[in-house]
Image 1 (cartoon, rainbow, N blue to C red):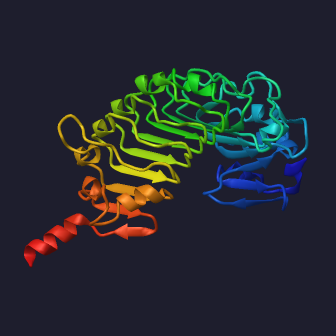
Image 2 (cartoon, helix red, strand yellow; image 1 turned 180 degrees about the horizontal axis):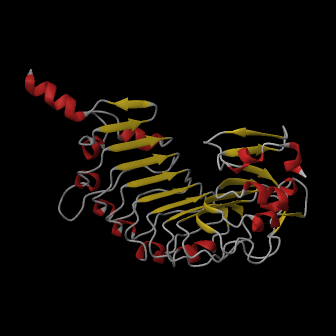
Image 3 (cartoon, one colour; image 1 turned 180 degrees about the vertical axis):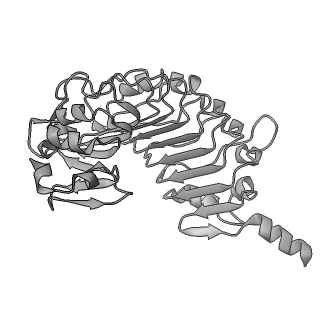
Length: 325
């Protein structure tokens, strides 16, 4: 048994230990938590440490590994990330009765699109944060009443229909959806309290949600790696709480939102906008060139502006210095 190699069992009770299968040794590290590796994390070992925290669990590197060892961590709570699930057999109620509020699931081998066993995303009434990475065959998740933070990367587009049914999200990340054609309208309608929204690497997506402007609590919006995105949606000027806007690698995006009904250009209405970053958008960068770009007047009120590799001077500083001269 593993613990037979470590006579100081009292030390193993610390939740701040981590185990490296490569070096076959323990180290104390409050930042890494406890790291186990598949079959090496035996039942007897789990009983010895009586761990309450296990930030990362790495499944075995061979096919048909079993991660039932997690069942024996009866006091497990808080955050858990399980990696290399492409090698694991997932059993029903694997994490039943675990007091988790953050769960991360990662399938490392995207060439083998499979889901061994049961749906692993079930039965967490208090779950607050969920991330699902590299699982294109997972098309449904449970509706967690407490879920506020969701991250989905390289998954099947259908899974967004489930995400759209959630109603208490404050943070949402959608990344690497090669087949995604649209964002469900209900995703915006049901999550009007969303404060942070990141959407990137969806090459077939031609437009952002038409109702994006309804997110009047949104403070951070990141848009990136869209080859087909030509414009931002109407109503963009209604994002009155927006503080940070990042637009990255959208080569066909050629202009910022046009005039609203009040006669003000879209971004000029966003008086709370503090940070604007535009990179990898050649035409848009040209239009936002300091002092002479066609869209410069739309953004000149923003304190911190990053266009291309340059940080443009702050308008407020420029204004104050000119008034004092």
